[in-house]
Length: 171
Image (cartoon, rainbow, N blue to C red; front, side, top):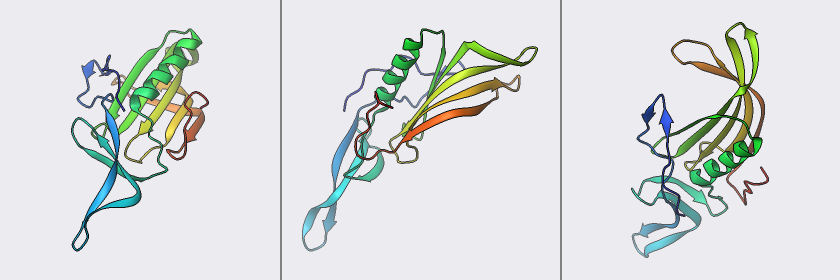
């Protein structure tokens, strides 16, 4: 699976070292049997960063790979269709294995107190390492400290395991 080049991955004004956009491959898993030699492991596949060779996960053959690029492309489509201004925050951790994309919509707000607003935030999560299901959520986003710390309250969340077939356009 190939992906588009990185457009911009920013957090606190710094480009992150772990970009979410790199080629990911699914490859058979083999063992080296002492008597029989190299043998393919049935019903298993490896999920690998094709650039670095980093192994994210050995998965069952039912594992449905959803690339971070697909998630970001779909999330941008969703936000663009709303026709509202947004602030995008995309970050990636665990050697690119986990993705978190956030879209804060500053024009949709509710005041808790004067100068203390809650904004609408769309979130999208994905992983290659099996730690997270593909997730779409909507929450209230609130700045709670001058150091930038925020809290959120989920309004709803939809999760889809990486098994079978995941249709991003339906989620």
